[in-house]
Length: 62
Image (tube, rainbow, N blue to C red; front, top):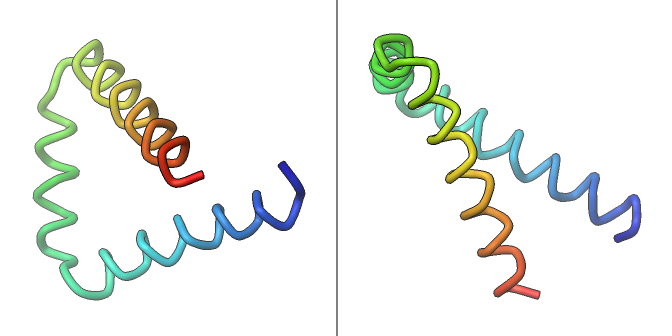
């Protein structure tokens, strides 16, 4: 994977994150509150599943 692809993927993630905060800031607050209420192990599992889903989607796309 070249540096340009990695930078493009990071830029894409930042764009999506920025749009979420710009278009639905109250929804982001509610999601963060829900995450804070979750047990630590559940947050770890959610993070792992999210990362694996991202890898799978990227693998399918390439």
